[in-house]
Image (tube, rainbow, N blue to C red):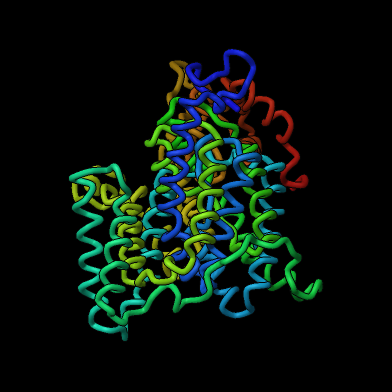
Length: 496
């Protein structure tokens, strides 16, 4: 565990055993647990499963990741992103197939960790990450709409009061989480006033015991694998992306470094455990992690205690949790979606300054994600669009200038830019084969040869000149370009 110097143990015992640090970690974990309850229930509803499935997932994810994760103080639990991915599977095939997909998704995360997926995060453009966050916010918001249609009219004023509390209370005090206050106030009001509105208890049975270890009750057949595999893969990708992005955010806030590879396989192990204990799976939570870190937590103790406190609260107070009006949870999720959305990204001043290609990538990521309700597909499409636009932009930065020596016997072509498949295809047409003198020099001192397409283009240029009796000399290549050219030159056309 990597800790700041102030938190390192002085006498060989773990830092979190210090009374001062343990007190901070415990209080942070309790606040996180209280904030996790409404969100875990809400995410369960988004996924179309009983609230206990989300609550069990939050407990097992938090406890497991406290031992296996690579980022201290980060909170992993049931999340909206995972709920959106697995909702169609739970709806069409049932909860047992969901558990099987969670186990398979965890296995895939372990394999991806071993393959070095954490290192690939450096290739994820910022515009794709912004699109990912914005799409997640939109999907969380739209998932609340069914709970606002064909409901008693009192739901709407309750929702308005809840939103007002969550917006106004933080301006007065942040000692108590505003979502928790809103939930308590609306629950007390509806119970004492005897108002009949949809409640959490109407959505399904809450847990009254500890989660039980078991194997998902699905046929172990190829057909089952083909059903759950797409959801498991999407869950694995989305979970890793959100977890690694959250870990990087905590690294920046705490000025510490975390092991992203360990975090990746740790998430996988936590999801495997969660699937076998009847949970819906999860990943790192940006909101709860920020609550934990800003409360002063810096070790895994807070993550572990958050899971333990959560289970104690829901098992001991399950009947009270069932009385929470759905309007309160809808309000919580609306605030989560508003807080998740990157409003700066669509500000007119930002859009004016931002390159059109960056905005295009962000919009493409959002549009595909919202259209497919699949965050993984949206991110993949966003990355592909970013790659195409980047290649197109770089391709236009290649230039070819020529000069004839004083004797008129040699023409020198000076090539500038990055030469790869997108930029080198037009390179062949930048030379005056018919009118050039008997000697041609191609100077690549300000260029770089990146791929076989460029080597093939240089071969084509040389062949065209040699057919006219012109001698071609290629000079100025750096070591990497020269090595690539020497390896591939003359071997890409099959002798034609």
